Amino acid sequence: MNRRLGVLISGRGSNLQAIIEAIGSGQLDASIAVVISNRPGAKGLTKALAAGLSTEVLDHKLFASRREYDVALAALLRRYDVELVCLAGFMRLLGSDFVDAFPNAVLNVHPSLLPAFPGVNAQGQALEHGVKVAGCTVHVVTADLDAGPIIAQSAVPVLPADTVETLSARILVQEHRLYPEAIALVLAGGWIVEGRRFLLPV
Ligand code: GRF
Image 1: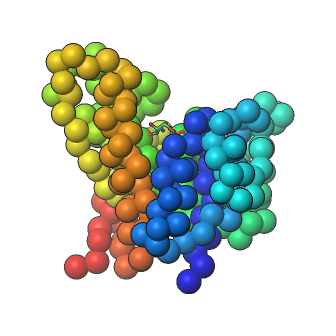
Image 2: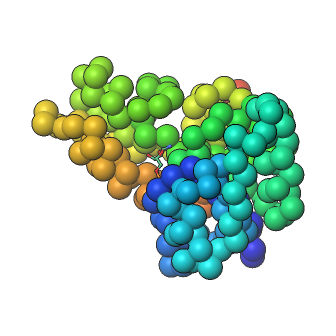
């Protein structure tokens, strides 16, 4: 089976790398049709090229409006015949012009236990708030930031001596495990989205 993923990045690309490795090991029965970055210098592009993947840069700065960017991004993914879009550190808000083009087929990994701490610097927000448990969430992307139906979550402890760096690193280990698992779950099908809830087959 060749299930075609499009992976969107803006930076380092460690989650992209985790997806590449899950496919390589046979844990994830899929292929990455294209890796698209909105930032020309994203380090993740080097990881994609090293894995022999097709890459594209779609620089949001070259577009007059969010809507035009969203439409161009959806068209680019269509050109690669992508079935499922995986945001992996993609630091752009996507509006309904994009999301509606891939109904329930855009996923994101976020470094908090949503609905706590959406948006940027989730790990810093968690530390600031003083929570004792943090973690990561894989969710379906909707036009509302970090608010779509939750597919899977993983928790980690927050330790007294934690900094943003140490907590982020602990969460990242879980992201790399959880994201490929959640993608496999979505590709396996049989699930439904009912209101806010992502329900697995019984
Ligand atoms: C991850 O923590 C992800 O949850 C967040 O941005 C970071 C991206 O890291 N959305 P990487 O580019 O996958 O290494």
